[in-house]
Image 1 (cartoon, rainbow, N blue to C red):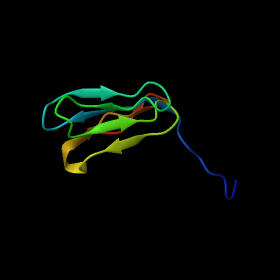
Image 2 (spheres, one colour):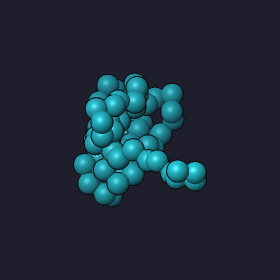
Image 3 (cartoon, rainbow, N blue to C red):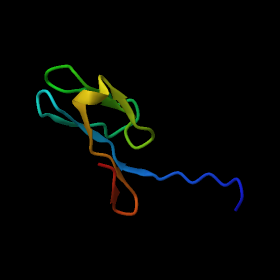
Image 4 (cartoon, rainbow, N blue to C red):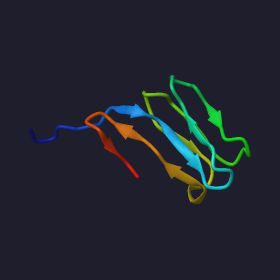
Length: 71
C-alpha cells in the first residue's frame, strides 16, 4: 500500500557498554537501566528503544520479531 508505515515490533531492548562490558536490558515501559560504570543507559521495554550516553560507547543488541537482529 502506498503510504503504509511498517514498523518492526521489539522483542528485546538491550545494549552493551563498551567501557565496562555490561549488557543491560529494559524489559518494561519506563524500565530505565544504567550499566555499572554509569556511561550508558537503556529505557522503553518493548514499547520503544531509548539509549542514553555516547553512541561510541554503545553496542546495540536489539532483537525484533521475525528473528531479525540489529547489530
